[in-house]
Image 1 (spheres, rainbow, N blue to C red):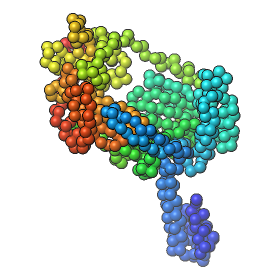
Image 2: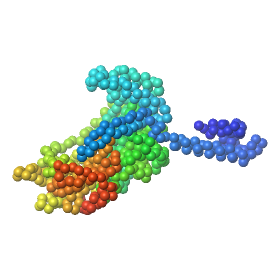
Image 3: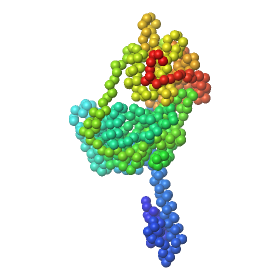
Image 4: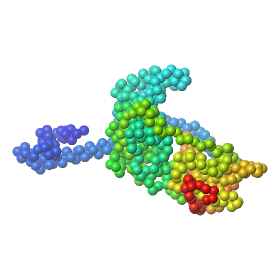
Length: 529
């Protein structure tokens, strides 16, 4: 709505006055005393300016996750027994599907809703899908790969929907691997998806010849040690993007509009430890999602919900001024030859064994030699430049171990040592144990992992001595937001859990004193230290 439309609705204001005031406000004429005084002219001009401001505010705050809703489903989780044998009763929640482009009944949103409704009712028992068997019917890749059409009837229905809403189909998805990230940027003529002070790693995904894309990567912000797994989606207007995002408990998400450091208006939404960023950038929609990985050390930040300050800092790290340019499959394939797959070294992996207490976390992998394994680690790790090491007799048995960690997070990723393959063997082999944790006085080795279930994730903290014996076992449930402690960690045949408070869990963790190691870049590895 324009200011003229607003003021014409005022019954006591003459149209001629409105026109004169608007022209006066824009500097197109001077006030004419015979028609209206300057004071009155300024008054109406001020009202126009105020109305424009209010309209601008309304536009800025109109976008909400609810405006992008295309469907909802009630998910029923049947009763089950948890990892410790505990009974978990049936639960229900509502999963909301959100469009990744368009809102408030835009053509893109309506087309997605209609397409999803069609797919929901079409081929419910997947008979036609099985009959097609890897596209034996010959559906064009543009429809088979990009839009998951496995019959010509589906392809015709899709085109019918596109014609109805005056939308164009995207071309066939073009996939790229992490070593082909430069290919992605070159093909779409982009500089970066993130600001210069954000460290981006391991990007992979797919894009269309028209410019829509889906990218996933790890990001570390300047001055921080925690990395984030980010999904960055760009859906170009006038082209039908066939996918959607699903979230739980939409009414519980906190939402607010935010202007980023570069002046871009975005919608931010947080729930628990998750963040969604939505930006209408004119010729397309940007949809970014990330969440805390919740694997923090006891002396770093604890696993807390996403804060506004944290969400806004993350939002400031992205580039919203991207304008992907079209390309062709032939052009991309010609570029691909410039980004060959890196040659892989022969794997030093020769087997594994379980720790003595019979638990699977963490198992020990077996390699042939220190040098071969370190070379392989440097060659295969996407974070090789961040790896560091030290050589130390960790368990005071006269044998040196190699501690490998990351200098940006402070975490120990693994302990490598020479060990006997089994108690009766006289032959020593290289074994390495993954930790993703820390080493404390004792020494005590902490390993952290997460187990994902349908309705929760369990964050496990295992504390072991150098022989692999479990001496402490804590876990955090993301659904209940409760900590638990195993009462008999030393006995693998008994697993009894008791709830503890966050303060009690932190006290247990803080009782362990971290060991400080003199670390060097792993690229400088030498058994002489």
